[in-house]
Length: 400
Ligand SMILES: *Cc1c(COP(=O)(O)O)cnc(C)c1O
Image (cartoon, rainbow, N blue to C red; front, side, top):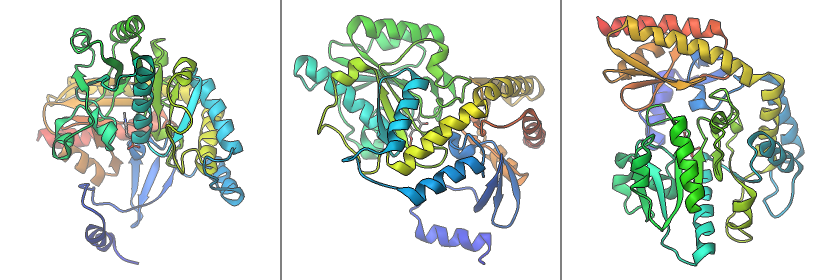
């Protein structure tokens, strides 16, 4: 077998260099731990970027997927399949939305949401110059539609022109949103908790005022729950905490716990007055294997009381991280909800994350100065303690 170093050399010759990867080749997982190909063990507070909610090597999850592989993997959307029907019914139940379209990724769910909003507005007035308001520091994905509403000019610059008629406002600043509204506005789009942009939760008053504004002007509210959804904040979807229901929402990441699947969902009102036969499609989206992943994930969320665990361990993680603000001069504040937390430092966090990796802890950043904590949702307090011991050692090193 090749050594880790040799594999990494091979990788750098074969894979397109779009990532500065950490110098680790991961091999297998068990619960909340990952192992590299040389057998080194890591406590995982990244979960494949908020994906692997149920932890690794969950036997029921694996068995359900294996059974589906033996039965039927793909059919195309020209035909019905039972796993997709069951998964759509379950998604409706947990979200309170009415119509589901399965996609293969988060970005693709965002694309669908944008198309649905534009079609809804088009059906009202026959015009094609409608505008969407998105937020600064947002992240919605790398495809053209999703990139066009991503509030990070660095990601967009080389790839201009974007899709047109997008305006940007400030998250949690209602007046800045109002200042971008015109009679062409068809949708307001944001993440209920901004993830990549630095873990900024939407404030309740902001959510409520945006909802009222949308109702008044028949603007669609689109909430991107790709990262903050699926129980991560202690609610199945983060907006459920505020009782502010979107007209369209997106979900992905933990939805399939590693099998690539996403969805955009809408209310009946939007469903009846937007995308219709021939307007949108996907070859793979909601195929039996991906849909069965959604089914087993949602079943196991219930069986394992995932939401209760997030509430309990999330509160504990908050308390522990808050203590660091007092202890270390370089730690400015903590932001987040449940098991989606950001520790804000007064400096870039890259060296701390690399040092944590050396010490057997997987962390990621969210922007330059924020350490992001998005562990599997099955972690216990003992794992928080284990993480804190390593993190303290890294912070101490950083301050020396
Ligand atoms: C990850 C993410 C996306 C993009 O999802 P992909 O599956 O990578 O395309 C979109 N929105 C948010 C909020 C995300 O965190």
